Length: 147
Image 1 (spheres, rainbow, N blue to C red):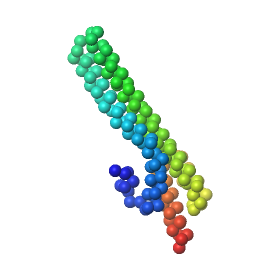
Image 2: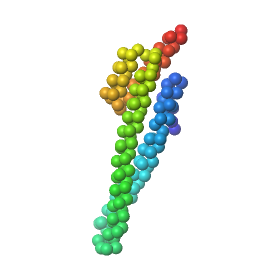
Image 3: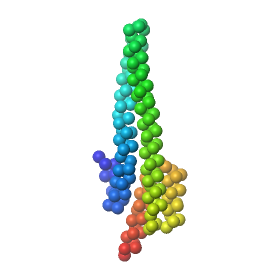
Image 4: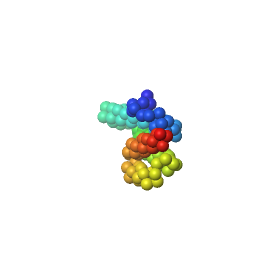
């Protein structure tokens, strides 16, 4: 399901958000893939390591199996860390797109554009909310100019 369909937005805003989504799509696919694999790898590794360490005697036969599960767990943790890094990259790319789009607007005044850019830079987690506010303002001004 498209996350944009949950909100009631005008066609103008939906088009802009679709453009943003196309720019973010490769990164979000990687994030979801990494997250999909990291959690099961960590869970399988942790379960089997606990089982082996507490229920099986440590000897030459169990050592390679313990090492294998430790490597699997490390791989899962590395994917989890990469997921966090990619999420931050998604935020940055989204904020950069919003700033670039705001700067290219010829409808909104330079003062208002600078306000939106400063808000996005100050609170990157709320960047999309500020970007949607900007798009609403831009759309309203365009409608007023048409009248």
